[in-house]
Length: 222
Image (cartoon, rainbow, N blue to C red; front, side):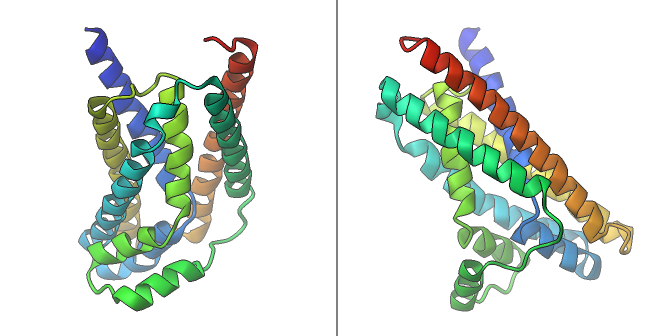
């Protein structure tokens, strides 16, 4: 029973943070916004599916590392502090976003090398060239495990990954449907509002991480 409960928590954690992590203004959302109205729902969905396929790879890399280090109190404090700062910076950045960004140069370089032609590969390559996704999951994975949201075993990490994929695809499905059926009504301004919501969510996450960091420092043996 206890194991089933922990798996449900891991699934829910992956779903929530997978959804929130896909909302900020970035290469995938901008691509879906630009192409969904012209090329249809299926094309937009496949861009999102390709993005989540690469996202899961970054997710796996992040959760595969550091497994033997969580018993160290100093390691936990360090990663919690870094994650707190990262969530604070990202949250403030997305909350203050004023316009849609250009495609970052690393993504342009990767696209020039791979020349993706299908919607799936466009999404896949655009996440491949965005190391911020890996950084995000490194921060999330260390906190999920150190705070007990995801048990430090393969089953819990896998379930969390499934939740992440579902959460991400829920967002991309909503965005794709709105863009393809909205006939231009789903504007850049609407996407920016979504990014502001994501920024606020990340700032609240930073507050939670900060509180847990305070508790960790106050109870070094916990």
